[in-house]
Image 1 (cartoon, helix red, strand yellow):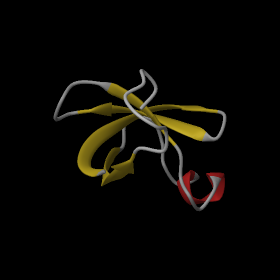
Image 2: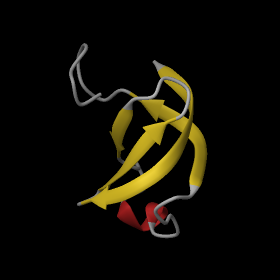
Image 3: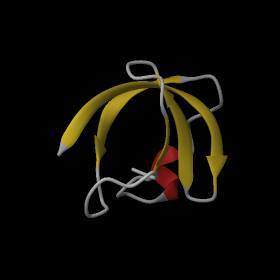
Image 4: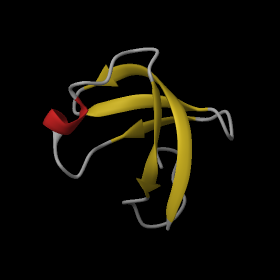
Length: 63
């Protein structure tokens, strides 16, 4: 299930970008299916609009 998200970039954590979602006020670790290089232009404090697709089976805290 894909969800439309609006978030603020908080920081990088390895290959993930940590986003603070402005819609539901939850923090997500987000990975790109195009690899880390696709996220290199992002900086802390930037706004991001995109889709998050769950890649784990079922509800987990890291989704």
